[in-house]
Length: 513
Image 1 (cartoon, one colour):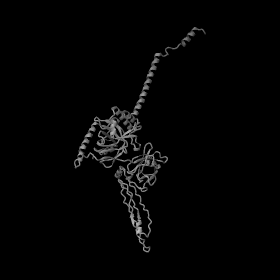
Image 2 (cartoon, rainbow, N blue to C red; image 1 turned 180 degrees about the vertical axis):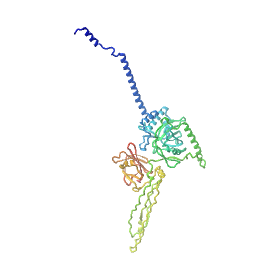
Image 3 (cartoon, rainbow, N blue to C red; image 1 turned 45 degrees about the vertical axis):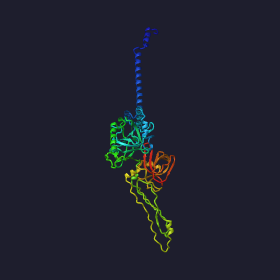
Image 4 (spheres, rainbow, N blue to C red; image 1 turned 45 degrees about the horizontal axis):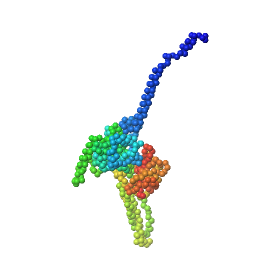
């Protein structure tokens, strides 16, 4: 029935909303507030993680950051630099160092030390500003072995005083493997001189400290990690980059008590050696102290390993001289051209020319043909070949800038390479044989007795030629062109390939201009 009141009331009741099923406005507002707080907390946590990661990666010199990066394997160990690939820097002597760092305030000094250490831990990639390198001569006060409790866990640290200005002290770090520490420590004696030169030593500053008495103490380490010739022991010792760093130990390495002990030992050494200038008798020195005139000699790299390997001498070839049978022979020995001074004896025999003099031909009339005379055999004057130098002699020669130079085409026999063959030698090695390099090169850098060249041959963009010239011979100017054939090649001393594919070829000039 359309107008049934009961049916209408049922419809009204059915269409009426269930108030119990509708959530209250109070409960709805509480849930929204909770989610808002949670989202804000997560956003803050993400921002903190982002800032924290930026701080950790941006400050590897901090102990916590360094430990995290080391565990995540996101940081490399210090590496050995080549002289031609070292980071850009400035070379400072003692007066310049004192003028720069004496005026720094404590906060400025702390920020500077952070930058120095950060650059070193990052292997100077990227380097924040120019890297300061120390140059000059320093006298060793004392040396100490490094342990796991120090910043550098293996090697020897030396406390030395500048001979140019005693107000400058350095603690030079010599890192090496565990087996070489004892020999290295015995070589770094009180009174020994250390020469830090810009040509072959890059002692980078990684920490600066103001002492209470007004002096400045630097912590330095050679990023070339070179080889040195021992002052007391026979042979050489080589340095290696540290395998790990104990950043928690901090810098400087030598604390106040060790520094006081080193200064007392050096004062005792000076008292022992001072009477030598006033008394004819030699002073009595302790066996653990070096003589005042001794120096720590750096062995130039690359070492002349090929010179220590015996090589067969070339067979002398005598040029026949046509002489008439009717003319008597008066042999005269032509004077041999004066050889360039050398430090290692040559193993190449020298052949003197034999020729008749025109005066002898004019003075002696020809004899009748009926009475022939026997033609004397020309005598060849041959120099006795010197023995091949022993390895210690070769090491001494590599430390010098003087070596044997030859006339064009008169150098000892060896294998001749073109720039395209260098990559094969870099992968297989030289095998101890004598190797020469010829080709056309462009000089890209020049200074002193060294020049850096690049081959003009296509496909050789990754090859760098480092040429060293002997004393008395000037390197070609920057931007010039150099061409060498088989008669005037460079002698290859070493070939090294870096991780980036760059091949460095170390050669010598061994022919006269």
